[in-house]
Length: 62
Image (cartoon, rainbow, N blue to C red; front, side, top):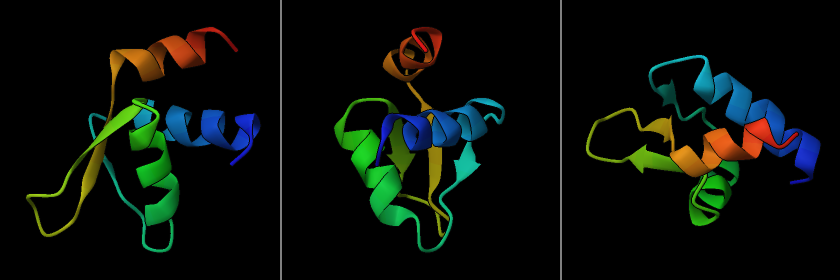
């Protein structure tokens, strides 16, 4: 993903308390998680992503 794609996805996640991991985008979410920008709750039927302080900081340095 390029920077604009990362920012767009982080903004969507940041606007919600947690964002459902959308089908077909699992790889993108996992990439953001590996970068430390989000965490994924895999304990529920529908995975949900939550932005981390590092993700908020990433958005702030746009």
